[in-house]
Length: 295
Image 1 (tube, one colour):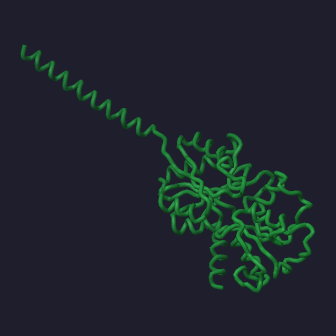
Image 2 (cartoon, one colour):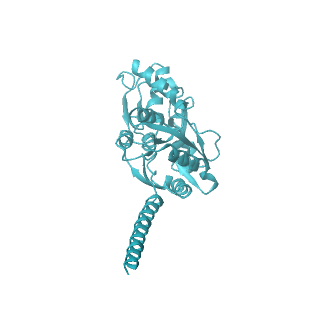
Image 3 (cartoon, rainbow, N blue to C red):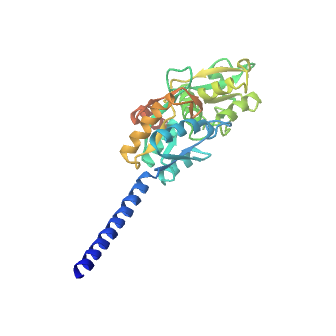
């Protein structure tokens, strides 16, 4: 009788332990099975830019990695850097100049850049655009005119225009060089300022110029490209180094393979595919910033 009681107690304890271990294992499995969550911050590249530009790519990346990436939309470049610095966002689309700042202040690392349909290179240019009937014939003719730019901190709509103007000994901060200089707030608004005769010339991204031409915001005969800059490193997709290395590799691999799984977009609209970029690709912009800061 005593032996049976001890046997019963032993079986009860064993079953209880098994139940406890089963619960622990199931809990661990549920935790590991729950998708890792990341936030992606972006500044619209144009008046028409929103998360629809990025949804296709992000949905594919989520599917390939098992992660859950959600959007955070901000209105200026400093906010995009701050979002990653404060760990409110772990992935971001940056302009080149903003990426340099994010790498320094927010531990960002560039890992991919989009190539637009029909193009072989992810790089782009700054265009100085005037109306077709403008009397400006040479780049140096912009002196004394009204200049519109994108926004402070923009690479192709602020930094590179300053570089190109410096080559002809002009400066946006010298009141004697221009009748007026103003930031329109976006590449599209910069161009519209020229079309609406609020500005004589605008400095803008070649990507946005071609995108607005394609969607018939304006006709080729409405404007002229007065000056074209040297190649600008592309706006990179970057992630925080706080993301574990294994997860960063998964994200990068998924982005680079995404075009095989459906239509994708990115900063500035539709993309044909993404290519690998690295931090050192942006050293040329770092050097430009240093030179401008010395002046």
